[in-house]
Length: 377
Image (cartoon, rainbow, N blue to C red; front, top):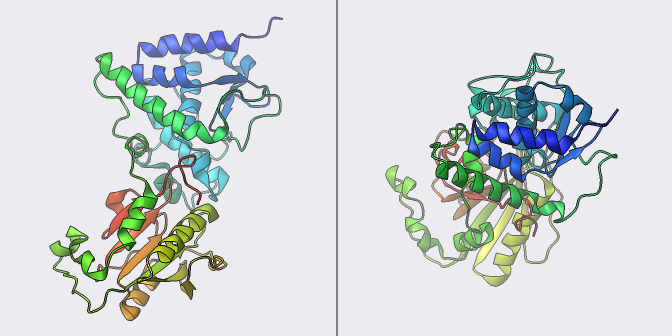
């Protein structure tokens, strides 16, 4: 028997999707599909999409279209690298909930028993993951894990750019998909209200430059830093000297990986070496605060402590006692905030996949770059 021609099957899906959505069809055009008999039906490692050719050939055309689009959206939305230290099965289920909503919005069928939640699927995958805590053993638990840690062993070596470029390439693909759909006169993409696509669309300024701008100034310069403080009547008083003290807090609840900690602390140490008037103290925190550790240029980064849940209130209680001039908090943003904003300007440093900007009740938000765009120090 002649083995199925996977590329012919994929080409048919692209043609059919053009009639439904130029946006989705363009994303499929950018995907690299690779045959693999090790996957149950299909899966992705974030770079390529692996498809079992025999299974693909056995599916009705619209079911195949939904399957391919499901995996391409996982790859385009960086669902594999964004998992970080989170539990794999629950993360896969959260990502499936997001993607299934998008596939359904395209008018394509979903497999029987596929995870659906019309409220959750419009959130970000991190928010869905948090909402699924404690719901293990419920519907959807038997779904296949299609987010792969690496390529299947029967897949050929990847050609072209190294894997670190995948996130950038998918961002470009998403931008081109929107452009093509606009030219096709189909209006806005049918999943435009999903936070997953919205959070990946804007290009952000380099986070290192923003951090230096935040710290390389005198306390008096912070008088007009954050207009939201003025709205609450919290006016910062001018200080008598030109020194600036910073409290740097790092969330060690498990939601921030080591690379983000090293990147932020090393950059703060660079600021300290260039600007002697800046002094910084480091705390680690989960539901408690651990420290203090004095930060100095060139010193090794203190061993992280903690690992429980996330509660921001202990750090802000310390800040109220020690009264630093500014507070920098590295976290994904999913935790308990204090009920009252602090007196000092606060900078939330958020790794990829963290809470949306509007979820922070006070302070400014600085986002670390996506992987492959200068994330590591």
